Image (tube, rainbow, N blue to C red):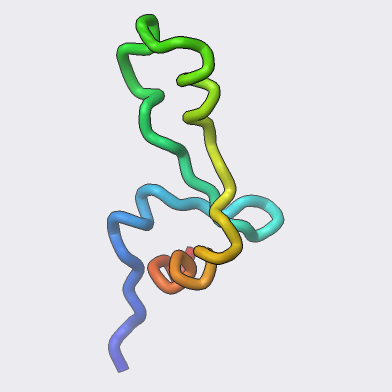
Length: 64
């Protein structure tokens, strides 16, 4: 049997939290931060994946 491989793109974007949930960072916090307003920056923090997406995301990264 071949090994189960993780999706390489998802592997770079998702991580497990201490409680076992999946978390990811939203786009928009890498550069040009001086011209973005506070609300824009606040909305692009790390978020926990929604429970309805959990099954689909877990299938992408089974070894995570």
